[in-house]
Length: 134
Image 1: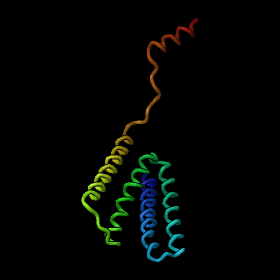
Image 2: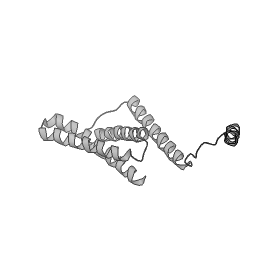
Image 3: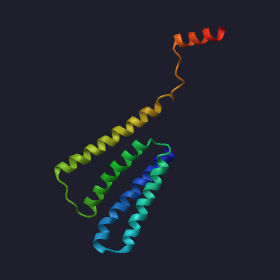
């Protein structure tokens, strides 16, 4: 599970890097920029697919998308001097809270024992043993 989380972090990092290059492409309009962007996003999906082998796909995708959006927003604020209003900041805060809840839910479900075979009701087991005697 540890390795799957590393893959998920690598997927998030490459998504953030790939998506952040979109702003640079707009400024330079070079084919190299598009190539780098597509390569990084492809790498992101590759690592996401590796993470999804051990982490439930819904959880992996939620964390990938939520943290990706949050980090891309931070990059746009810190690097590209983007301006966010209060509503946008509140939305990002809710996204982070949701990611924390999903991740904690995954950790809690991982602590539960794996389901054992369902127990057969007493009446059904009695009926089977009666049939085998006849």
